[in-house]
Structure formats: C-alpha cells, structure tokens
Length: 112
Image 1 (spheres, one colour):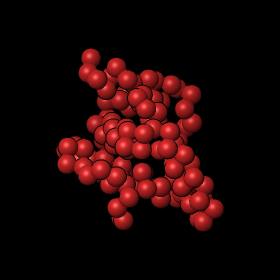
Image 2 (cartoon, one colour):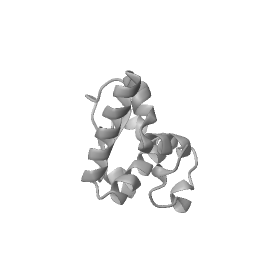
Image 3 (cartoon, one colour):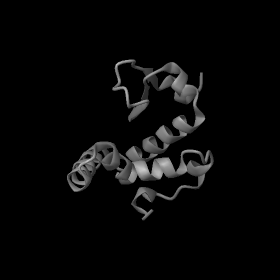
Image 4 (cartoon, one colour):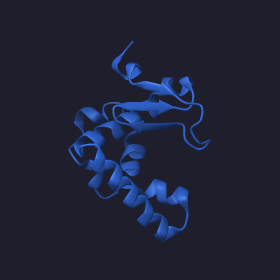
C-alpha cells in the first residue's frame, strides 16, 4: 500500500458531479476505481500541495471566497468552479505526472 492509498477514503455519498475531494491529508473518492485514474490522482495531489503551501485552513477560506466572487460575477456554478485559481492550475497540469517535481511555490497565482 503506497502513501496515497493510506490517505484515500471512498465515500459514495459525494454529490454526483464530484469524483474526488481533497481535505488535507485525505483524498476522498466517490468510487474506489477513481483512485486508479492517474490523471485524477495527480489533480488531487496538486490540491494537496496547494493546501500545504497555504497552511490548510487559509486554502479553504481562499477557495470559498474565490468561488463566491466568481459565482457572483458569472452566475454559473460550474464556470465559477473552473475559474478558481487552484482549479485552473490543477486542470492545466493534471496530465503532467512530473509537474509536482518542477512546480514553483504558489504557482496557482500565475495568470493563465
């Protein structure tokens, strides 16, 4: 069992549009099979790194405030979610499996 699997939780009650959720130090997957998807796992590992950088609680506050502001601007929850700086970074680099090795600190702040 690797380090990722030790911190993996399966919860079938996640909302239907959520495949995984990262709550440091855990990654919660809707289905165990999702933990076998390397792109999804990498996406969630990027969020773990972001959470560590912001000392965890500030990450969640920033995430929530940014979502609310973006939702107020575009009036669409899906667009607001995808526009969050943390999500933009994770989606942009989720298929780059060496990204975390070369990632610069606070890279979510970089304009995309």
